[in-house]
Each structure stands twice: as C-alpha cells, then as structure tokens.
Length: 300
Image 1 (cartoon, rainbow, N blue to C red):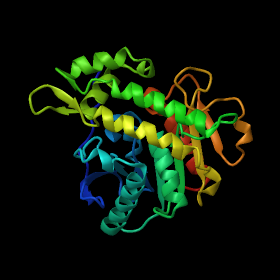
Image 2: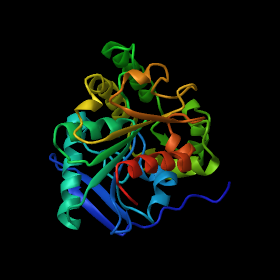
Image 3: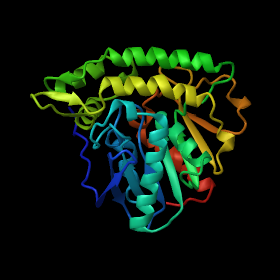
Image 4: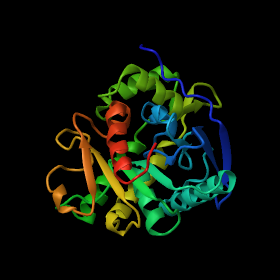
C-alpha cells in the first residue's frame, strides 16, 4: 500500500452539546487568519475520511471539521433522535459555538450529499448564516423525477444499509469489503485504509464496529430523500455551488440531462468520478470549489 493518509492533530477541539444531551466534537485545523470553512460529510461516513480533499486547504483557510451526530468522533445516541430536524439544529449549535469561541467571521459551508441538504435547510431556515455553500453531489430533485421517485430510492438504500454487517474482525477485513462495493471502486488502497480508520471504532468485545450503526444510516436514507424533494436552492439567501460527480457514469446522484433547467443552481461536475469524488479526485474537487470561491470573493 502506498503511504497512508495521516490526519494531523487539530489545533482545538470543541465539545458542542445537542438539545437532547449528545456531544458533537468540532475540530479546528488550518490558519486562524484565513477564510473560515465549515466541513462535514455524507450519510454513514466521517469528516476525517475526506482528508484527501480538505487537508490541502489547511495552509489557506481556517477549517472547522465535524461529524454529524452518531458518526465519526461522536458517541452513538438514541436511534429515535437520529432525525433530519435534529441534525439541522445540531449544525446551528456548532456554528454558534465556533463564533462564541473564535469570534465572528464570514462562513462558507462545504458539504457532501446528506450534509448538503442539511446545509441548505440551515441556511433557508436561518439556523446558520452562511455566506456561501459548496455542496458535492447535492441530493436535489432531478428534472423529470418526482417526490415519490426519490422516496423509492431512499427506501431501497435503507434496505441495503440494514443488510450491512455492523462489526468486523479487523480494519483490513472491512477495507477489503469496501473494495468489492461498486460505490467505492474508484478509490485506492490508502483511501480504503483511511475510511476504515475513520468509520470504525474498537468493539467492546474485540474487533471493530461501525461508528454509525447500519440502522442509523438506514433511518437517515429513509427520511432525507423526502426532505430533498421539498428543498429549493433558490430559497437559500447565499450563493450555492453544486458540484456533481460525472453524470454519465454509475454511482452519481445528479443526472447530466436537463440540469440547464435548474438555472438557479451554479452547477458543475468533475469528469470520471462517482459519488465519493472528493476522495477519488481531491485535487480537481478543490479546484472546482476554489474557482467558485474566487468568483464570489472568498479568497484563501
């Protein structure tokens, strides 16, 4: 395996309380004088798994990286509290804690998939005052599809998630399992190693278990496609950039056909990449994001 990804120790870690008593661990990386980015991840993943993308931003930006509840660094709470509305509220509490501890500054949200939907709702509802949003593979309603179409997709993904194993004897066994799954087939060996290290924790009885249990991932799939069908980027009070994977290959959320109809979306895609394009092609994803930030005057 080529040299493994090594995530540096954060300069600061905030413990943010959720309204139901949970903890969100927020890590601060990068340069304090740089423009401020808030970064998180997609369903079932972990923010540190996207280090290939955000790691090289640390010399230009002040980075606040956090996991959604019941993911990554955070403890697992009650399944009945793992709801979109709570995740939206969690983000507001994270933003408030950042401002309280490190002062006010323009804020850009950088999201993937599920967290892109959350970021839009946080902006639309006034939970967080974003100055810009960059959303990779944003789960919009594609032209020609209906809410019921999306709900069927969500229910299918939920059924698939519930069938997943929750524990593995070794991280290597989990990494080998990932390598056989189509959504991961464009990643490299060190990417599988990174995902294993950031989405598994040591099990109480030995071995390793998923930090986000399968039933939690499934419940979110079952819920968030309904939310995406009633979400409009035009309602966000800030510039929004949607960066898709390649719409011509399998494993991409957004279709290429008809995207010109969504004129309220500043849309681009990264050729030859699939849903995890921030890990597959981190340099090109950063370039697409930085071009947008330069255009709107967010200089790093």
